[in-house]
Length: 381
Ligand code: SF4
Ligand code: SF4
Image 1 (cartoon, rainbow, N blue to C red):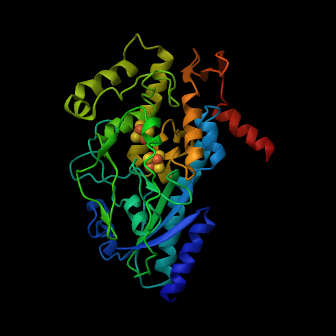
Image 2 (cartoon, protein in one colour):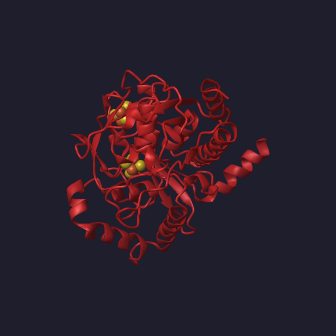
Image 3 (cartoon, rainbow, N blue to C red):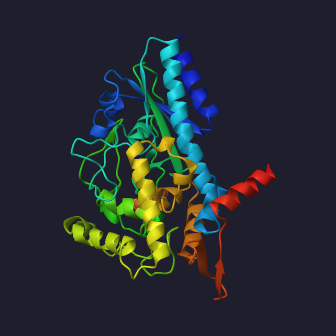
């Protein structure tokens, strides 16, 4: 099979899996990028990366941010990560069965380099994947890094999941994206309850140059600050009016990133409060223990592509989810979030939402549980 045909068939395999965008990048374009852009770490003679994208459905995002239900995003995230991994393996097999080239299926998320010891999302300051799909995606012409640090594409913004394969085949790189589609609206910053990344300061820890373009994004704090919020162990707005999909109404945006890093006891006190402190309702402590257990299990597998549906529980992810391509829609989603109220747990541990309506009335409702949501889907099919 010649290289053009190979490239065409690989792209088709990604599109058949439900991907909406796909591009090819070269090793040369990543030579001036940080170490996690080094293809050789995973596959010594790699020359090309193929990166593809699964964007979040808009109606699922509307429901998620309005706190109507979080199961549509859960379902899509499960689909995206599992498809990312199975498709990457299929493409690796396809390349190796049909050509003399080698290939490497990149784990879509959850695998980090451990040169400096073990990795924990609750403790880590920095986290480097084996191969950064974001850097690969920029090299493949899919877009550039946005203020949040996520890839932002023209067609779907940054509300998406990435997947990729490395190969020794010298494929033809797609043109680099000429424009950066992040308009610095900072909606991502407003939607984040932890302050993991800065509103105004640019990251200066390492220069990111890909294909001759300098990538500019927000200064980041320690990785654990996002980890604890993304997992759902904390998450409420600074004015205490809306939460993420967590019942732990603790805002850590108040701690500047330097303080968070310099004083690990702050993190330990929060963990003690939410997991052990008898003043914390027992159903909340149980909820938090379930989250920690589920994350520990997934971390041990080091591959979100193998994560079962029951352990797929997006509770934040806001900085990426909210960054849809249409700026007006982004603002609308932010408004939905700001008016979405807060999540609580009842005595049986069931999640409910308390919201203040436009008329100033307080409403309380129970979003569908996992069982209700999926059994209703079964009935519709
Ligand atoms: S939300 Fe706005 S500022 Fe943030 S990455 Fe997206 S486009 Fe850029
Ligand atoms: S995933 Fe959530 S906590 Fe982490 S940076 Fe994004 S918005 Fe902030």
